[in-house]
Amino acid sequence: MGETIDIAFVFDDKFSDLFKVTIYSIAKNTKLSLAVHIIDCGISEENKDLIQKFMSEFKNISSIECRLPERVEVLETYTIPAHFSTAIFYRLAIPKVFPELSRVIYLDCDTIAVGDISELWNEDLNGCPFGAVEEDGNFFNEKTKWRRMKEINFPENKHYYNSGVLLIDTHRFEDSKIFERVIEFMENIDLQLSCPDQDAMNLCLDCSEHMTLDPKYNFIPFASSSAKCLKKIQKPIIIHYAGKKPWEMNKKIIRFAASYGVGKYHMSMMLKYWEYADYVDGKKFSSGNVFHTLKFLYKCLFQPIERFISRKCCHFQKSFFEQQNKKAS
Image 1 (spheres, rainbow, N blue to C red):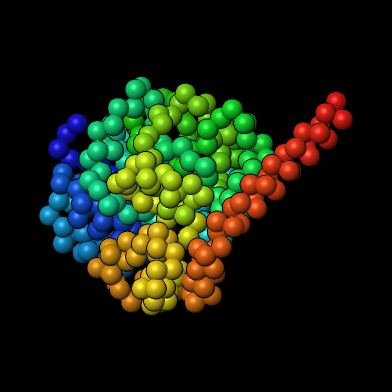
Image 2: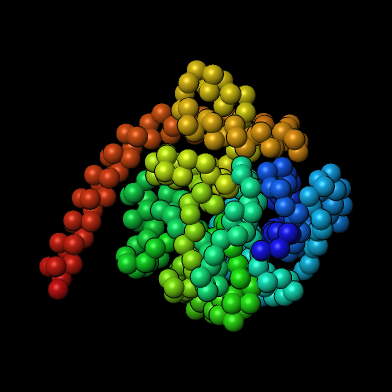
């Protein structure tokens, strides 16, 4: 690969500060030059100026370009969960908005790089349009996972992947008409999707159209199997804060809990984010909701018990539905 890594983001004003944390972590840990490409889904001129000024501090960021996507009505009018915005769909339009790129890394703004992303950049896609990390989903336990997969009629023989980190071969991606197929899928679907673009990609694309990437490129620290996964990969390259958001937590309470050894693994993952967020704006990212924080601590303490109960309940429910289906047939 060349000496410059092309990296893309898609966001609006709500995620401008989170983007700064992500790009700072990447710039700090990556040796190669970075070319940053942003799809503007509603970024104010003031925030654009602030972003430009912030990124000028880093010598390895060689360029930054911000472009508008061609808006698609069906995506704009689709009702999505409050913590998302319609920007999530336009990650699939990166090859259209930046057609001059041959390969690009896409990252969500709730990620940080704790290693050199050139490792991801140099991965072989083996002729696939894109690469993604397969996951259990952002599920707190097996019961939730099973229920979610049933809700979206996801085939049991398929592997579900996360769309928060993608390595894209732009030409093959365009040739496969992935954006158009997802739009068509959204036009005809009668389900309310919890993770709209991600669910749509998993449901309407073939398994052979993505290359399975190592979990170290999209490590979700609060997924049900994350602690076991961390032991296998040892050193993540990209941490993805899907589900539990550090900026929604109160840092003083988290630090206090960590000092007493409460939820050592979970606390360390929260504090890792603030290592980078403090550089951007320590105050902005440290005074989160006290209720969310206490709820998070409660889950850290009782999660193992809940998972055990959940597995038993899940097994019972599956057995019950299998028996019902046999009777019906």
